[in-house]
Length: 158
Image (cartoon, rainbow, N blue to C red; front, side, top):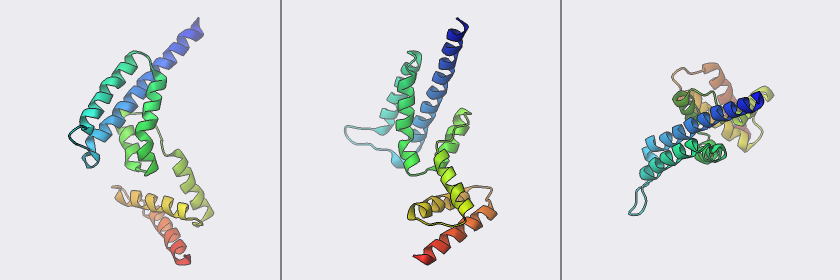
């Protein structure tokens, strides 16, 4: 019986987490006016507000699988374009220590360990990281210098 209670509590915690993450992802899309769409028959702001209501309904009906799928759907574009600010937004908004770019950061660390860029995809990964580092308030000059060196060395070989 205690196991069942623990499992129910774990699900409740997970439900709350994904409710919060989905709502934060929706808020991010609402706040990003550059991606807003408004036509005669569609308004992205109205659509996202509707999704917020549906999210709360899914939460109240214990639909964890639905909330997880919605979260994956809502973060897909941000992960594809490697919008690193989105990850920070989610952490700040929800308080959850989530890293939707874990695989990306591992790839960057492997490139640093190897000491050079060998593919166009690695070049893109490092370029995005340099842009991110340069846009932060506290710039890591050492890391930025190393990554810029990798970029210029790779470009010189092409």
